[in-house]
Amino acid sequence: MTIGTSLFVIAVGAILKYAVTREKIEGINLDTAGVILMIVGVVGLVLGLFLYSRADREPLPPRQV
Image 1 (cartoon, rainbow, N blue to C red):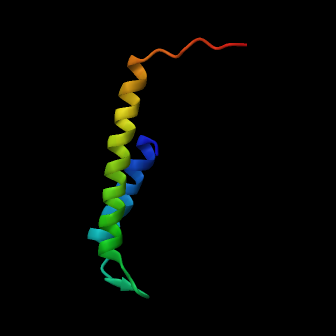
Image 2 (image 1 turned 45 degrees about the vertical axis):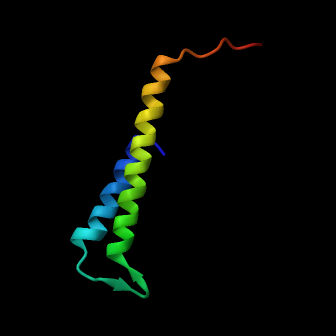
């Protein structure tokens, strides 16, 4: 998950949690779905930032043709 995708998932989760006034749509609790999306987005963001910072420090091995 890229950093941009993580931020998008966090935003969608926050919209479902705080901006949508209906609580359930046919068995799906939107508050819970919003919290789950925000958690997944934060985990993806942390992992993406970790991998991005690590990629800058380690040079790529030479390619063999």
